[in-house]
Length: 257
Image (cartoon, rainbow, N blue to C red; front, top):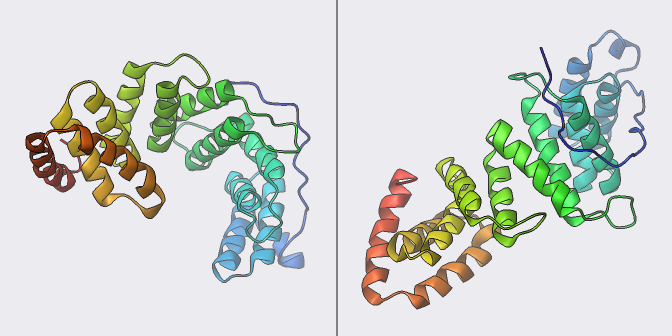
């Protein structure tokens, strides 16, 4: 079966330096990489992050995708290790280059690696060979959005399409991806979709989506959603505001129209 792999080229970076450390000494040599991954996960849950890192490194060296992803994420977050975005980038790159068997248990790790790489290309990594490359980021988001239907990738791709980042602006395509993502329950996509159709003249429906998104969003997204909704609210008539508020309650109940 053909693996689904990365569709864009990466920087030529060195291979990930993994330590062949066995968290259970001789007994661990009899364990497969998945068993060691489970040991690492249990250690992480207990707060033994150094033990988790060693287990993940060992299993990653044996080719276990989940362990690679977990180790990369710990480097990206500075969780149990010194934060090192370039190290995380290299590990995510290995996952992406190796690809994934369609429908395999590794699909989620592969997609998350694509999105993490897109984020790095979008911003660049200071003091590393990874410079900001919006075009590369856009391609990676597109792959995760189209081939795997990932709502977060669809949202981020749409945002770039609206702003013309990494290529030409395309409002029609952005609207399509936002619509897909909001139907999967992505609150940010719901709000941004509402803003797009509001600007197209669908005042009540657009404001209703923005209001519904603001009512159910996480604290992380509240500021930008609130700014967007309040600006639209100030431009709408009193009648349109009342209708939008009523419609937003229905949208929240159904999750979508």
